[in-house]
Length: 321
Image (cartoon, rainbow, N blue to C red; front, side):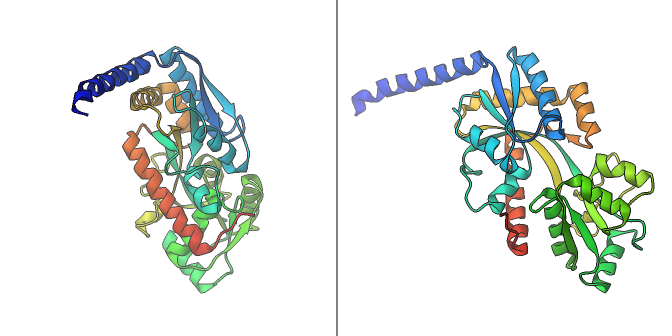
């Protein structure tokens, strides 16, 4: 064994050199970026903006492929089972941290099958009410709900969707009894909020801000830990309930076991792309703050969100058929 130590050291050095050379040569062919949502939506738009800038910088096309279905599970599974060589990446939302608790059995392991690269952007939702609701603050809204248990309705864009889970988390945090009404998509829920068929809802900043400005709905609070830069006059729910911190985010992932040098290079290129003015404008148009976290920071966000939604979903006994 002692006699073989020099050979083993030499092999390790060669392996390290080969890994470094591979990272320097990367990418030598087009890179696939798998998106689990339809073309033309917010996730797709940001994925394409990021992919274009990264491809321009690295000299190879970053080709976005839309693999829709099953709440992004199909797209996520493709990446989980792809070769860990940096040529197949995943661009996903925080649905990545929701699915493990919604679905009893996933075809991949969220904790171990992915290498987080960076958070691309994030934004809170906006809690809004119909103007007929006599509440202008979170505290007043909670008091009104307590005075009428089960009478106030809150729209959700579908069972297990981010708007549904935000509603459930708000109900649990404020310790109030709301009737959550499920819709098939955001359009119908927005229309019924404006029409007064439901009392309140969580919605995206780009979707709700114009309606609030026109007086069709009343903005109560944003769902993040702090006020949104685009709506500084609107308080955060966390100002009343400090533990409430819910945002929508987009992030870039590689398969687990992708060489660290390649992950590091992808991270650097993604951060550089996110600093690009055109990409920043795209993020701002969707109401998002630019990301660019370290891989470790992104991993911590994923762990925190996964634990959060596990608790909310378990307590509310939410099941997906």
